[in-house]
Length: 126
Image (cartoon, rainbow, N blue to C red; front, side):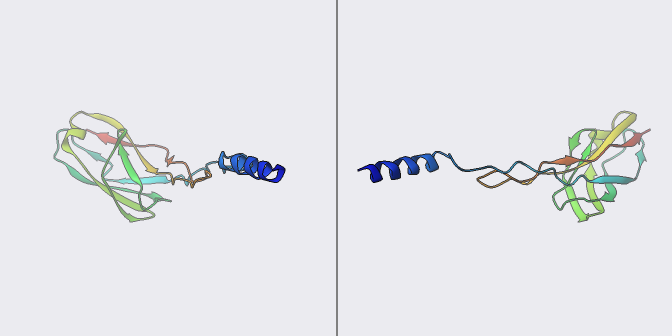
């Protein structure tokens, strides 16, 4: 009976997570933006194709134009593109452009990587 009780307690302890460990989330790879093509447009213009050059872009990286994530096409680890809608360039000013590499989920015991966003590069709307 003692053996049965000990086995039952061990099974409950393991089933409740006691004795297991979790792996903390790791930092993601931070992309770098080195160029914007074009680097300016005239306010009120039509939608336009936009290229962001840099490094360490993940295959699922996202261009953030003035803080809004855009539908992004991966070209290479150094080039991604998006179509910027006309509504995003209605007013003159300077807007930040960043690139975010989304994080990767961990498994049942944690892990994975965190999302990482580049430092901003300014885009001018004349």
